[in-house]
Each structure stands twice: as structure tokens, then as C-alpha cells.
Image 1: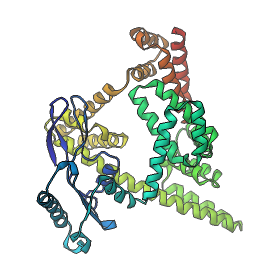
Image 2: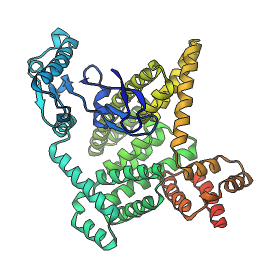
Image 3: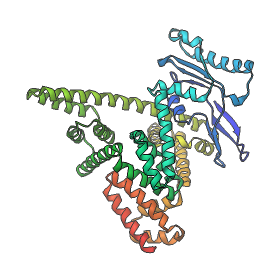
Image 4: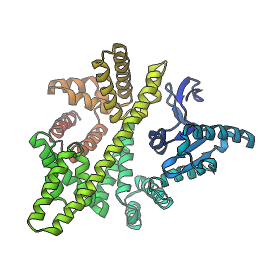
Length: 445
């Protein structure tokens, strides 16, 4: 429900979406929203202050027969108030469920005393156990220590906690690096980049990930050379790396656009060739791999549907708001690439149907999102983007002349981090332009 709240920091009133009944059978996207920490997250459009709102929650997952309630202790509700609020939400969940789908567990909801237990119960339905959660907490603590430790302490921590350094740990590190980059903290970004480089060369998990990156780089280079993705190219690189599931998964992830019916048809032909040649063991191995990739394909399709559903719900909420600018700011964290793709498709659809008013409103949403995004980009990144978009060295020199305060060693460090990411993704042309910009800035220093 749309709820107006007043920012405790600056006093600005604004409207945000508050969910109390989370029925993932009715709205599957709410599950990912709560797991990502975005559910009932209120951010002031004026000062940026905010956080998670304290509100009673009733969670219903019919697929796992999970029905639980949670009332934040900080709300200080007495027993009668709790019963009234929770009773209303439970009745609503039952009423929303068709009679033939109601089960006995729905009449005995499980009360949960802490938000941590509430989240752990949801995560268990995703196959994430309490032991896995405890391990990730240890990894998070280790990452925090490594980010601030000097060389000797860092080496000791790595040696003593090598069992915690896995793909999940490296993904956590990458996520923090992206957050630090958005904040414009170049010093911390350099430290984290150096830590990542050390982990990639000195830990088994890092070396495995490096192999994956090399394979993906070769795949991207081949796709670029032939002018785009194709089922044939994806199959070629999958078969070349068939003995390493992690590498295959990385290549498939990079080539999702080619993971279609034609890919699996060509894969079947390869299996039949092996069978005709009498290589039954190899044919069985390829059949198992095809079956695994089919499951991945099904998961991708299901995730895509969920993401599009979430994007549709977010866009509809924004469109229904009286103040588009306020709504865009309140929902800005939800505007990812999938949302922008959905927004573009809605604009095209409305235009084809001649819905002029809707097209104008959708385009206004798009403009406000772009405006808000540009305002949140650090000035160093804005400078680099402007130079990358320039057509000549003369234009780039003029941009530097207009922003002499940004020409510093710090921007070179940020540029170096960006270059590393570009090199890993195989974008040689972009890397060449970055190298030219780097030389231009260095010459001024």
C-alpha cells in the first residue's frame, strides 16, 4: 500500500510503498525483493536519509507451506494490538487463497521472534541453510579485516582462512568494489583491487575464476570477430571446455543470447555423431551436459519472467504516483538494466497502439531516471564518460581544460581500475580509448 511518511532527518513528507502481507504465491517478485533488502525500504528524496521501515509482516509461501508472522519489538505493541494486526493480515492471506488451495498449515501461522530468523526461514526455501548463512557471515567479517589490514596481517589472515576464500567470497569482494566505485572512494578502490589481484593469483578459487575469465575472454573475442553471438559459436566453446563445469557455466552466462532452441538442436546433432562413431561414453557425457544446460535455460527463463513481473509492478507503481519525480527517487534502487529494457518495450508498445498520453508519461519517467542517475555519478566518472563520448583529442583536451580540479593521480587510479574491468570483458577498442585518455591526463600531471 502507498503510505506517506515524514523524513525524521529533514522533515520532508513523501510517499513510499509498504508491504505487510507478503504472499509470494500471489506476487512471486516480493520474495526477491525481501531477500535483497529492498522491501519496505524508504529513502528520502530530499536528503537521502532512510532505511528499513518497521512494520508487522505476514509471509506466505504456498509452494513450501511456509506461513509465518513477525512483529518488530521496537513497535511496542501489546498482545491485543499484535493479535488485531496479525489476525487481519492472516485473514487477508486466507481470503486471497482459493478455497480448493487452502491447507491446514494456513490456520496455524508460525510466529517468529526475530527478523534474522524470519529471513533464515525464507532463505531455507531457496536451499540456503543456517550453516551456509553462518559461513557467509564469517566471510563477510574476513573481508572486512582484509580490506583494512597491512601486508603482514593480510598474509596471515589469508593463510589461516583459506577455506573461506571461494567463489562466493570473490563475488562479495566484487560487489563491494562496485559500491566503492559508485561512491567515488578511489583510495579504497585501489586497495580492494590490489586485494582482488592477490586473491586471483594466490588462492585456488581465484585461479579457477581466472581460468573462467580467460575462457570467457576468448569467447567474447570470437563473438566480436564474427560480428555477434551465434548458437554455433556458443556450442564450439562449450564443447571445447566440456571437462570444466564452472568454465562452461561462465561461457553460457556470457552467451545467454544464443542459448536457444537452435543451440540445443546443434548439441543433439553432436551427440548423435558420437553415438554413430561408437563413442558411447562420450555421447553419455555430452547428453548429461545437455541436460544440465537445459535446466540452466529453464532457470534463466523463469528468472526472466520474475524480473519482468517485478519491473512491471515497479513501473505501474511509479505511473500511478501523483508526483513522478518523487516516485522515481523513491524507487531508484529498483531501476536496473532489466527495468530499463521493460520500460523501453512499454514505450514502444504504447507508441504502436497510439496511446500518446501514456507514451509521454513513460518517456517522462525515462528522462527522470536518466537525470537522477547522472546526478549520482561521481564527478571523476562523469569526466571519463564525457571524454569517452568525445569524437576527437581536441574535444577531450577542452573537457580537461574545463575541469582542471579533476586532473589528479586519483583519477588515474580510478581509470586503471576501469581499464582492468574492460580488459577482463574483452573490450579491446574501449581499452584503447581509455589508454589514450590515460596518456592525456598523465601528460598534464
